[in-house]
Length: 230
Image (cartoon, rainbow, N blue to C red; front, side):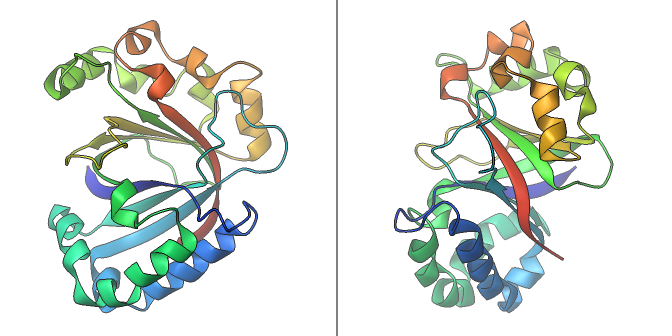
């Protein structure tokens, strides 16, 4: 188990999709220069939406990237927003890169690794939202009853090299009310396309999960790593 901040980003609309990864790398370089960011954030993995070829069936095209940040501890997820150096250096640059400020699309999660191998360069990320009328406690119970340790590594996902479930722990920002974030890491873009095939990625999820998750309002991102540190 570990703590992560994960964000689901849209680019500043003045940037072309192809320009976004470089602008994002430049923004990350500012963070690398901040002492408290280096202390609180143990690793950064910027995953930009795959632009080459046809979109993966069911994957979103109205977002541009997913950032996976491993934290020193849970307290860091709160402290980083109030850090004077971060506010002075990183926050003013955020509107240049993103559609809004980073805090407005960031979720804090507890990580559980289902298949533990080093990450590759391509990841399908699912942001799952529970059905309305199902509270958070009921979602957690029914999630475990759906046996994610099995279905997250079987079927179309059996070819994934690394598999991770992230349970959203702190209240999410408005518009990002997701409950679970799933990562499926593949060896290449082609391997992921072959695994998912020509049908919507949602069709590979078990019926028990489809009955508890709001699939139309869940988001799947087909991404590749465009920057990481260390």
